[in-house]
Length: 261
Ligand code: ZN
Image 1 (cartoon, rainbow, N blue to C red):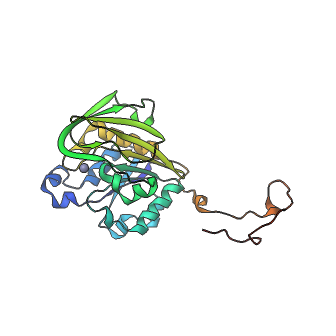
Image 2 (image 1 turned 180 degrees about the vertical axis):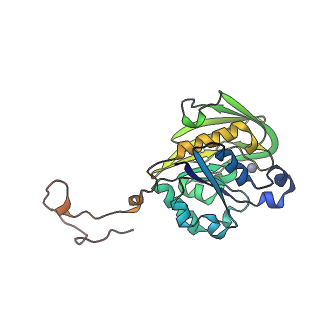
Image 3 (image 1 turned 90 degrees about the vertical axis):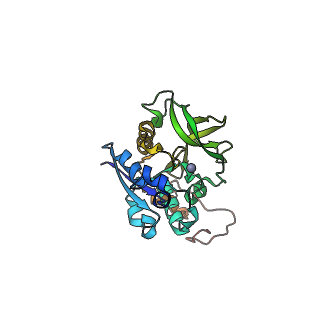
């Protein structure tokens, strides 16, 4: 079965800004989903901020293997309950790919636990994206670097936790560098942050970027992605211990009592 993927788009700039609308007439999320659907191993649909429950009801998330997230102008409009719902699915094993300005999305900050801040400049600079982990599945099929001719600069320090792996580092014309492809694991969920994708440039139409997105979905996919037990904290009775043991010492909890949360 193909990897069930949902591309979530904030869907604001493309509706109110002429420049963005010309590059992405059907919305950035639709262009990204088309890039993913070019691979038979992926089945991508879309969801947007404006839909009921932002297009992410529990039943749909339960049938999602990988969620891709692009947001920028109104991160605050995303309902906290939906954010928590997505976080729980990541802990259960759903993959999450956060793009560009999604570094400040509620879901990314929730899962990173740090400010996720960075330097930026909107000056149409050339971005040279270096592969610094050539053995990584997300970098397969690329050369040692590729160029995005027009991009917004993002510069270090990017205040995220030390990643599990660094796949890409970007250089910008103005001199800054940025860790532009990083992975983390939270619970059973694989998370990838990918930097390019400023809305006023045609970044998601570029072949190398689309190739990375497909690689990333395949990397983030986890066949064991509905591990609901990740939330449980069972009190295991003495009688059911795997080896026979005698209870001893003082205790706080009554037999069978639920733990505190
Ligand atoms: Zn941007």
